[in-house]
Length: 99
Image (cartoon, rainbow, N blue to C red; front, top):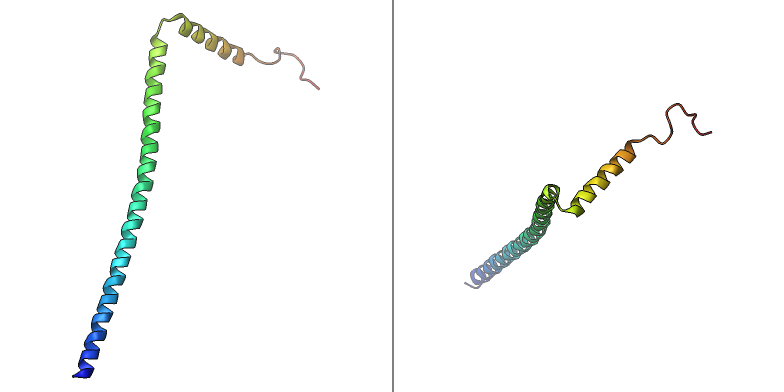
C-alpha cells in the first residue's frame, strides 16, 4: 500500500507541475498578445491621425484656393511668379558655358 501512495503522490505532483507550466505559458502568451495589441493600437492611432491631418489639410487648402481674400490672392500671385521665375533658364540661349 505504501508504494501505491508514493506513486499516486508523484503522479499528482507531476500533473500539478504540468498544469503550472501550462498556466505560465498561457499567461506569457496573453502578455505577449497584450503587448502586440498595444503596439498595433499605437501604430493604428498614428496612421489614423496622419490620415485626419491630411484630410484637414486638404479641406483647408481647398477652402483657401476658393477664397477671394486679398491675402490668399497675393499668395497665389507670388507662387505663380516663383514658378515662372523657376522656369527661366539660368543663362541666355546661345551664350557660352562658363569655363
